[in-house]
Length: 318
Length: 257
Image 1 (cartoon, rainbow over the protein chains, first blue to last red):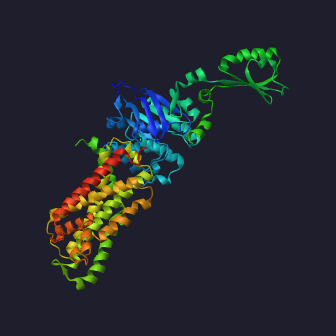
Image 2: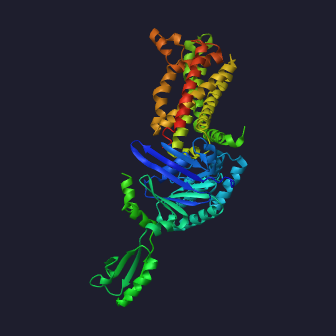
Image 3: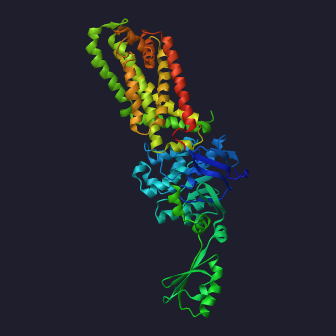
C-alpha cells in the first residue's frame, strides 16, 4: 500500500438528489493517506450521504469518487476491501453470537476462515468484549454495542476507517477511550474519516476538517486554521461588583455587560488580553477574575451560516 | 477459484444455509409434517374411493405435488424472510459495503433459499418414495426440475423480500398467489378429472400446474400435459425471476439510498 501515493479519498463534483431534494451539491473532498479527517456539520447536512456513497450504501447522481486512486463503482472490490465502515445505527445480524458475527464479517470481506476467527478473537479482546463472545448482541449494553460496531469495521484490517458519528450517545469515559483507540490506529497508519456534529470531537481528533451544511462544503482546513481565520474568541472579565453601565473604555469593542461580567468578543483573545488588562488597570476597574474562551469550530459555523449547528439541524430536517 | 475474491459469496451462502439448518424446526420439519398430514388424511381417506389414476395409486399420485409444494413454499419463504430481516435490521449493509458484486450477493441468497426448497421437497419424495414403494421414473429429470423450480421461487422470494416493508408483505404472495395456485395446479387431482372443460383450460394458464405435472412425470412417469412444456415453463420462470432479482439487487431497490 505504501507505494500507492494516491489520496485515500478523492471526490470531485459529487451531487446526489433524493427526488427534488439535492442532498449533495457538487462536493469536492481530498483526504490524504494517514490523515485523521473530520466531516463536521449539523444533522441532515449530507455527512452520512457522502460516506454512504464512498462505501456502496448509496448510489449517486453525478461525480467522480475515488479511493486510493480507484473508482468506487468500477473497482469496488479494491475500494471496499480497503475501507472499514462503522455506521451510526447499530446493524448486527441477530442470528449469531457476537464472535460468529465478526467472523462472518471477515468472510464477507474475503478473509480465510482461520484468519477471520483470529481477527474476531483479537478484536473482542481489544474492545473488552471477549467475555461476552458467545452471547448475541442484544445482551450487550449500549456502550458495548458501540465498541462492537467499531470492531466489526476493523475485522478485515482496512487501511481507511470511516466512522459515522462514532460517539453518538456514549458516555464521557467511553468517548475518551474510543478517541484514544482511534488515535492509536491513526498512528499505526490507518486513515480515519469521521463524521460528527460534536465540535469537541472534531477539534480534539482531526488534523483537518470540512464543515458541511445543506449539502455543501462551506469551509475546509485544519481546525486551528479555521478558528484563527474565521472564529471569534471571547474574553470574560468578572468584576467584584456590578457596574451601573458598561464602562466607556469598551466602546470600541464588541462588548456586553451581563450582571457583573463583561463579555468581549475578539478575534484573538490571547493577543488581545494583555492590551486590554493594561487599560482595565488604568481605568481602575476592580477585577475579580479573567477568563478566556477560545474560539471554536462552532464559531466558525456561526460566522459562515449565521446560525448555530443546532438551529441548522432543525431546519435541515424539514 | 480465487478464494479471496469469492470468499464473500461463499460466506453469504454459508450463512444462509447455517441459518435454516439451525432453525430446522421452523424450516424443515413443518413441510414434512404438512405433507404427511395430507398423505394420511386425503390419501388414506380418498384412496379407496378414487382407486388409481393413470395406473398409480392415489397416494403415489399426490406425492410429487406435495413435494413440489414444499419446494415452492420453502424456496420462496427462506429468501423472502431472510432478505426482509437483513433489510429491516439493516445488517444487509454488511454485505452492501463488502467487496461482493450484486450478482454474487443475489446468487448467494437465491442458492441458500433454493437449497432449503430442494431439501424439503427431496425429503418428502424420499420418505414418500420409500413408504409407497415408488420406482423413480426419471431421477435426473426429478432432480433437475426440483432444482430449477427451487431457484425460480427463491428468486421470487428475493424480489418480494426486497419489496416487503412488513411481515404481511412477505406472506402476501404465499397467501394470495402461491397457495391457491398450487391447490388448483393439480396436486390432488388429474385435470382430466375436472368436470368442466373451461376449468381444464384455465389450469393450463397456471404456471404451477406445469411444475407439478413435470415432477409427476419425473417420479411416476405419468402426466396430463407433455413434460416438455413443464421444463420449458420452469426454465422460463427461473430465467425471468432470477434476472429480475439480480437486477433489483444491483439497482439497490429499497436497500440503497
